[in-house]
Amino acid sequence: MDNIKSILERIEKYALLAAKTVLTVKDLALLLGISEDRIRHLVCDKEIPYYKQGTKVYFKKSEIEDWQLAKRIPTIAELRTAAATRSAINPRR
Image (cartoon, rainbow, N blue to C red; front, top):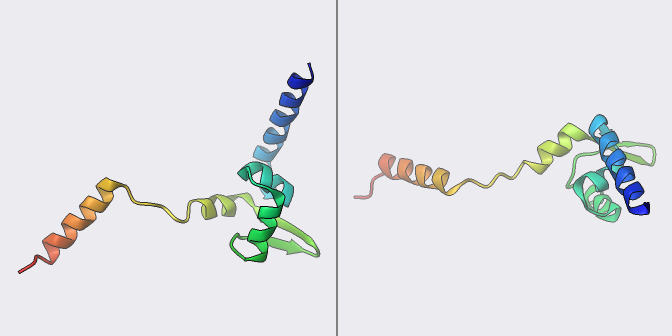
């Protein structure tokens, strides 16, 4: 029974996170699945977009999503297309 209760509590936390647009350190750690300390390190190193109100740190969910997707790795097909385009534009002599 305790296991079901803990699962329901976790589901409730995720449901509340889905409705939020502004997140706390604790919210973001849960959302990203990393520790609160890691979030604080990312903030101190200015590696993650954040806002500050006094001593409180907040995150805009849409900016975090953009940050997560900022370093896209191209697929093999995209790399091959780019290489073919370069070789067609600048053929070796």
